[in-house]
Amino acid sequence: MDSPSTDTLGMALVEKGFAPNLAVLDINNSLSVPHGFEMPAPWNLPSRLFQFPIEVCRPDDEQPRKLGLRHPLLVDHPYVRHVEAALGFEIARDGAPNRYGYTSAPTARWWHAVDLVSAGKWRELLATQEFTEPACIMNAVTYGCRYSRHDDKRAAGYITTAEAREMMREIGATEPGGRSAVIRAFSAPSVCRPDKGAEHWPINTGRQCAEDAAWGMIFGIEDGWFRYDRSGFLQWSELGRERYVAGESATYTQASGQTAFAF
Image (tube, rainbow, N blue to C red; front, top):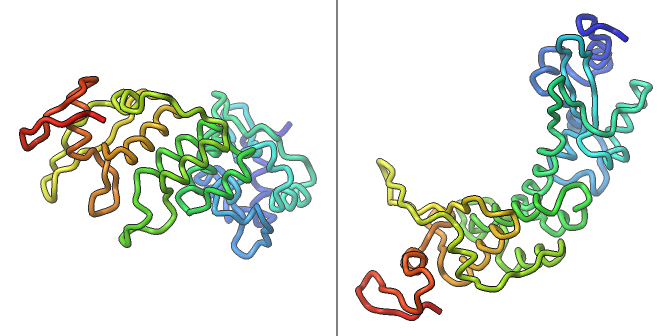
């Protein structure tokens, strides 16, 4: 085995054109699909997992440089096959952990979910869900609900509650009862007053699990607890703040001073 100081693998990657030099290779910690490389579906989806499929671990102490796939199913990725053919060996299927055991492979599964949701390709996400995990998809639902896809100031691609519900059904999530209780499990509304601009009421899901956070976002939008501001970002509405303070009471007091029923 070569010593880390030799870095035979790193020099081979540079020599074969997979990185411009060792310094850039160490900064990127990955091999990226080059522009113009032929990528058939589904590999051409705008997912960082597909665009940066190979993790690179730099030499460290007595550990030489290593390569690893960010997901075992990337074995069929066209660029992975190209790199393996050029190097003449099989790339490890379980990532390239450093000497402390850290690998970016779990993070890359989150990338796959959030990248496709934010690109408006949630159906493609469901079609390729074997590259991620249900919790990552649920977290991507929460992320996607935070933005209004109908706001011209933002790129199209964020999901509606109907689309969010379809995603949750497809991954086997169970809709809970007690809609208001799910929302009240979020952190209490707290105002944010910037030096410039209007005050904002950010939504903090707290320590909710991924499934409960996603359902809370869906319920909050559907029931009016949350609303989109002018920039298309979701925040607590006046109604939602009043309902949160009321707790499980059958009625609550509106900002106008009038009493309203909590249903």
